[in-house]
Amino acid sequence: MPAIDPKPLLRNEMKARRAGMASELPQAGEQMAEAVAGFFDALNDWPPAGTMIAGYYPIQSEINPFPLMQAFADHGCDLCLPCLAPGENGFRMIFRQFTIGDSLVLGPFDIRQPLDTLPEVEPDVVLVPLLAFNRDGIRLGYGGGYYDRALERLRAEKVIRAVGVAFSGQEVADLPIEVHDQHLDGIFTELGLAGADPQQ
View 1: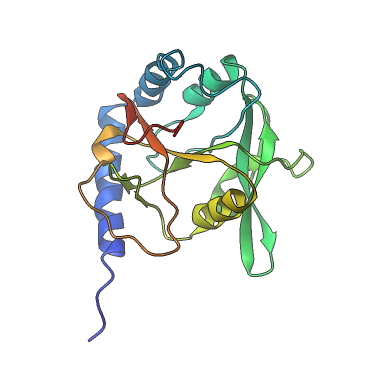
View 2: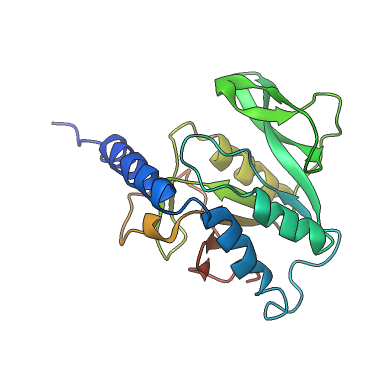
C-alpha cells in the first residue's frame, strides 16, 4: 500500500492557522521590518548596499513583506519581484527589477508582478513566502515547486541566500522533506530573526 503524502493535509491546516494569525496580527509586516532593521548593525551591516533583494507580492494571508522590502531599500539595497514567465514545461520563475510604488500587472494565478518591459535580474537574497517552517530551514510551500526550482537554478550560478518570511506562529517542530526541496538560510518573522543566520 503506497504511503500517504502528509503535505496536502498539513497545507490545509497551516493555511487555516496562518489566516488566524493574519487576523490577530494585522501590523505584523511593519513589526517584522522594525525588528529586522534593528539587526542590520548586529549583522555587520548585512546585507551590503547594492545587494539585490527579491521580495514577493503577498496573497491570501501571507505576511506583508513590503515594509521589510522598504527597510532593505532604505539600507541601500535594490529590489526585485518574482514573475512567472512561460517556459518549456509550463511556467518558470524569473525576477524583474522593482521599486516600491511601481505599477504591477496581474500574472498567472492572479499574482501581481512587474511589467514585462522591466529588466530581468538575478537576486542575491530571496525572501520566500511559506506555510510552515522549522528551525532547520525546511519550508512547506504551496506545492508548485516554483521557488524550489528557481533557488536551485540560482544556487547553481552563484552564492545566494533564501530567507523565509512568516509569522512566528508558523514554526513547527518537524516537516516532511523531499530531495528537491531547497533549504532556507534563515527566517524573518514579526519577532525578528528565527532559525539560522542568513549571513552564514
